[in-house]
Length: 228
Length: 396
Image (tube, rainbow over all chains, first blue to last red; front, side, top):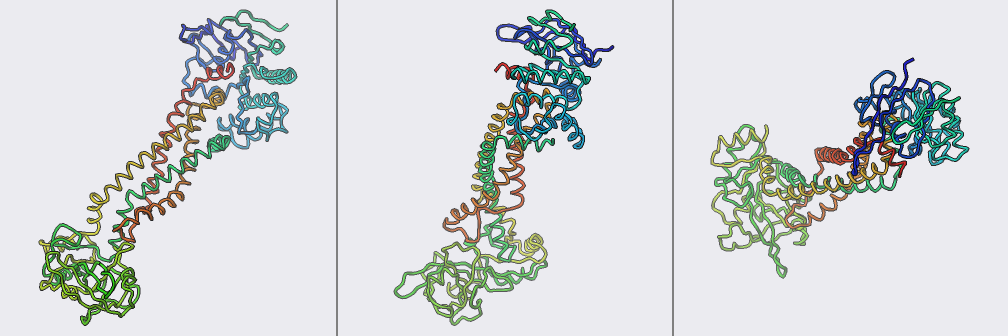
């Protein structure tokens, strides 16, 4: 079966004043469609950098990245934007919901950007807010939502254009345990419904829920674990 | 969600800053609008003034279109000859002089005098009383309201007038005139005292034995240009000029200062507008870097993110620019009053005159400013490194 993501020998070097910093060194990983993968490791080990490259918001300094069989490592910016818009969803630690928009409008934004019709957007937005359990909060602004609710809206927004891949960078990092558990359950459900999920986290409990876990150190994959 | 609504919401989320920005642009736009009105105001106003007189060609003996130079000789004959030319409806000789009203026990009143026989057209508008008639015993005099107030008599009363027709001549004996009407003279300023009598009466008052005039006022029947060509062909010794040519001459000479002042102030105003918009948008972008990076990560293209900034700039300028129009219009009325208080400015002339082209230019300059001012914040957005910005936000 063709993997959804195939990274070969990925390297990422950041030029710094005190000399280049090697954030990623020769990383190779394959992620199958529908898989749930978590990436763990200490701060600065390169896990967020890897996530950004897998999500096409950053480009590798070396190596190749294939998304659904297509080499995307050297795509021009507009093509990577389009790929992210239609095929990749992002969830951030700090949610980054637009504060001037309601929950429903935040979910509407990526769909409008993708050219979805108004009627379809309305239907999809309602469906997604119900999916994350916030149908009753559609008209609320982010400032009127709790952290857990805001992150659920952010997940709904990330799923708006039915992406094949959902990337989450420390999705429970700003949440208390109970809310973190809700988000973890929601990510389980997203994966169970067929979306490939990749999560970067410090949260061991969250990491344990994935079928496959990568542990990184110093820009390298130190070990790979599989659920029993 | 449409880009326009998105940009509106982005602006509205910072209502104080947006309001201050719009007010700032309105103030800048009002000044710009006034400078545009000023840049051509006098020219337009002067042209309207010339056209309001009813004559569109002036014929003089020299290149100067204004009275006071070398006079035309055989003015009656020249006027008659020109009036017969094709494309000419009427030609009337006009002579100017100064005068003094003498009243027992009262100070002498100085005035400007015009000698002109009323034809089908005349460069004054009768307000009350009668117009000039052929009577010479005593001759009729039509005065402006200012002179009438100063003289203090009633219509039909007689005044003693000493004319000053030529500075090289000895003082002339005063003569008696009858005030038959009050008229408005288009070139009068607020305080000016003016009177008109027939050219025959002025000639007698001046003691002239020659039939002279300062100029011939000509009304064309088929366009000023054609009349000028016909006059040039018939009388190459005379200099006919159209109102347009007089305006063009004033534009390159007398009114240049206003154009230059207007250009300098417009440039400075636009520079302030440019800086204001650039600062507002740049501050806004810098406060929203993480949010913009997140949108980019969600699939917003560089162009779309930059267009959002441009739209915000356009809306700030649009709202400020629209507010600037009533503000600028009110300001121009006030400034016009101040400038018109200068001596020698005809009451019906204006420094700030509205023309549709001023509105178009105002809009075009503001749009250009918005585009240029948005360029830097747009560039910031377009080159924003998504991953680094997101990482910095989390670390920060």
